Image (cartoon, rainbow, N blue to C red; front, side, top):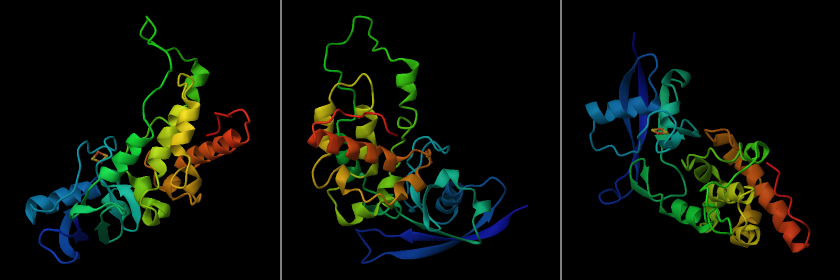
Length: 244
Ligand code: FES
């Protein structure tokens, strides 16, 4: 049996519109339908011009990140049954709108690249082709490796709203992910990349990023670890490395 939910969807085409508006649609909902299914229905039945991103439909690719009834979430992970009768959808904040819910992720990726999100081992590849870690060393990364780069933490972070150069939670967490990796040997370089007024110390520890992460990672704790180590480096104290 289906019920009807009203969708209020942010619409804006910078090439045609002077300002945004919310368009309303009535969507028949059956058990198991997600917000993404609702958007697909709207696009198919009412307006093929509605723009948004999606791909995997199962919380893996991170492309369907948006603001749903007051929270930043993945549209494919939100069951319509858990929402009230009205579903209000906005695009992610702090990113320019290309069209409707489809935002320009360029600044997010630029900041991500800026922290060198790859292993810097400091020596040639071993002949075996493998860089060995112990189980404990790998376990130490459990809470930092599963980021799907959806950008929800970036959109939820108030600091990104007033400092457009701030690296943001995803890039900083990635910097810490490699800082904590036992195979990585670029401690000083990594800390220098996240130092400065737009780096880790800019974080105000608001925990928004922690709250919205769909993989239950903790960018705030990752940033705190960078902060601790930035202070240690200033005091010529040995790096702690661990801490998330
Ligand atoms: S469509 Fe891939 S995470 Fe939602």
